[in-house]
Image (cartoon, rainbow over all chains, first blue to last red; front, side):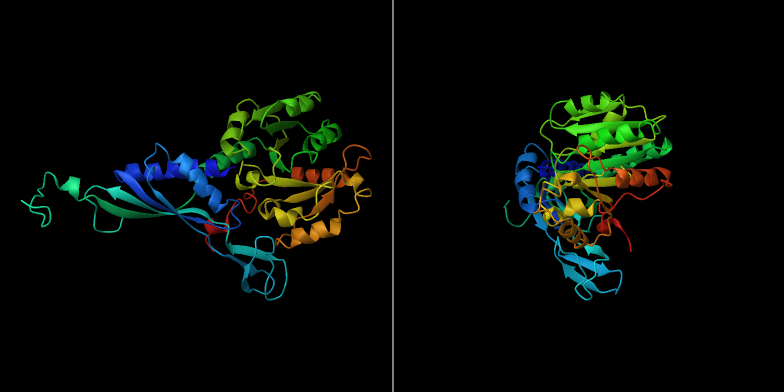
Length: 123
Length: 255
């Protein structure tokens, strides 16, 4: 159940962001979790319910997007969709491929409660 | 005074009512903190010229037995040490120490994997100076250890002859992370008709990997030649190398 470790890393990162923006709370956390990341979104959601208790994200909503797996063939150059255990080139059938998308384990955005919210986007 | 037009809001209390949401775009890798410590561990290894190998498999695939046989074969020529990861007991570290090789046991309690912080802590009990080769025997598990970079130079995954030959298809994240796959307890293959090494290799190739597959047997009829040759080759290779894929995730790489 390494999803709990991942959640703790996530909450550390979110807490840093909340502090640096003087936020009073966290509304929403958006993640990208690829099928090849080794992390199960459903288990991550359940672990988050436990890990967030008592943190600045105690009431935050967790939104997880799961990108499709895309590979590029090193032999013929084609890009194609693939399955986690079948990362072959759909064009030539070769296995000399590299993963373009689908192994992400990424914090994409955090929606913060900021007193006197600034109107311009924050980076 | 009303609650609708905003006439009660002053400069002094505006912060109480104007609270709003702001979205911060980040794009941080969730394991960034682990990866930073892993890079730090790798610097330690490189500074001392130590080859670090992360050994992973299911429980019972023969990791410790392979290490014992490796120490017997190479212990005279190379200075070897082992970090052992288990949920409980220091049985495996005791087996390694019995061969006169330093071993540090990490007991993870309920954690199903080693991470870079645990390995870093273990390095405080393990002088790297004078070592050639460090094995990190991960917790027996084909799932979680694959997601955590420890700072190793190479990942070796054992696929035991008593397991199914479709393990690479069932655990793609783990087998994609391998730099070498060893079919362990290969002396049992003649008795285990259901296990086809050719099918295991096909399942590995379907993951888009050229990873070499070798056979090892460490007990009945020892066969370690391919394994020892691979180790010798890695020990003599220059080691300023990138961390193994896919721990260096595609999403971090700018093309």
